[in-house]
Image 1 (tube, helix red, strand yellow):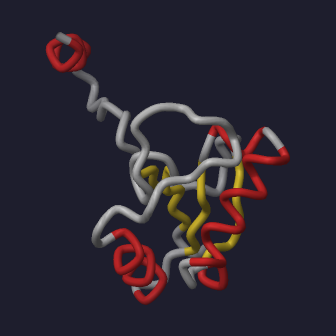
Image 2 (tube, rainbow, N blue to C red):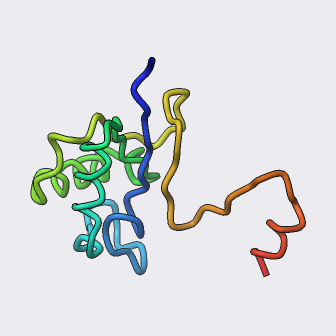
Length: 110
């Protein structure tokens, strides 16, 4: 069986993000985020950081540096800006869950 893989958004999900201040600026960890990542790893997930900022070399480097600085780089399989077939789940602060009901999605948008 394949190892379950989870993509975790970066800005606003594991680090604070209020407004875009450039690809090199990264906020502090959101309380509980580092424990969450460690718990995912302990439960057997492969963890990928998923972020639009990773398309830019400076942004990719800032994410990598942040993960190292906060002691979690060794538990993260990779950093990407692209959806990948390997991702079983996504955790994202801006996502809206779709379960087949478009009206429910529209209601969440208002």
